[in-house]
Image (cartoon, rainbow, N blue to C red; front, side, top):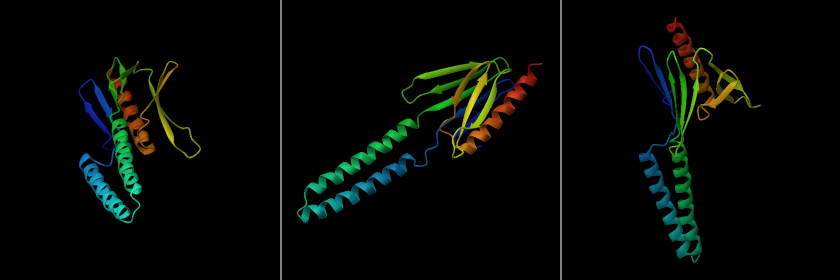
Length: 165
């Protein structure tokens, strides 16, 4: 598995937590923004000394837009999903960046994990399905992570079903 997945198992309950991956940590973001700001400021000063003073403002606008783009990306990275599995219940909880929670409950005996290729370029999607209800989840995972997680969750479902009897 990867860093986007953590798993906690007890004797009767299994819990998975799925997080989106963000390669640039906050410290790296700070260093990047300082570097971009310094370069933009220095080049803006050069343009201003050449008489093209309006360009200086556009360099500041560029820095502000880059900052906004990264902050929006970090905000969307606060989305996470938990899957709690016990012999009685499979519960998928999606927590949005706004704090809004969506919960989906399945009977683990009937639940199935499906990974399907939905796009011509080979990208996949992952779903939990049971008794006519289907929920798309793990959309922020890579294709390989989806396949790996589907295998792990299917194994946990098989183990949980076996512990019931």
